[in-house]
Length: 250
Image (cartoon, rainbow, N blue to C red):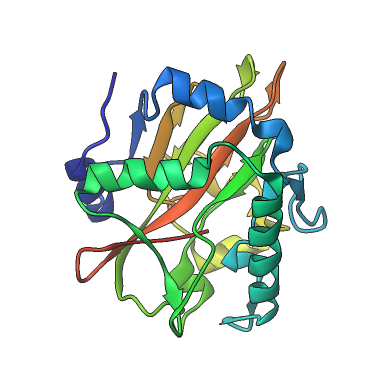
């Protein structure tokens, strides 16, 4: 058992820790109740031309709306549509809110949605990635080089909280390597050929339902395909800010 702590988040932000496998992050009875609601969650397919293997997801992500280093205004329409669909689903429990509250307990103060010109962004998605995810990285500072949020970020982390896992597969691998310009020759859609991480030190983790995985998403990472079951998680980014707030987005 590993309890996620504030010190873990600080060490991840400073690069002295590769990842934290918090087990469990949610009590067994709570994640079981949340898993029972997955069938009612408004998941839809992500653009297969960009993301393959196929992924189902609830909620937009800012990196789907990058245009020349700026946020496409259409993002906000998708945010409002997602919030309307979520309310219409009428879920008895809100996994996004529950995970944010749990993270606030760890940090010692409530996290908040990151803001753009005063408007709160979508803080969290639900993602089903049964076929896995290609090698990729996430870096909001690289995607939006002129800045995006009102907050001043000192580090970006990722947290995935698992509601369902397949019986076989579904592992996450994180490599100790960040993007370099020459990597673009190996790009495939939103990800990269595995040649970019050949021979690089890595760690592989297989979480169970109720667990959380927290890591620095600037490092290349991937997800193995699974069998015999669905791989569903709450996914969000954590921004550590200059004023000590956790600013959340997806």
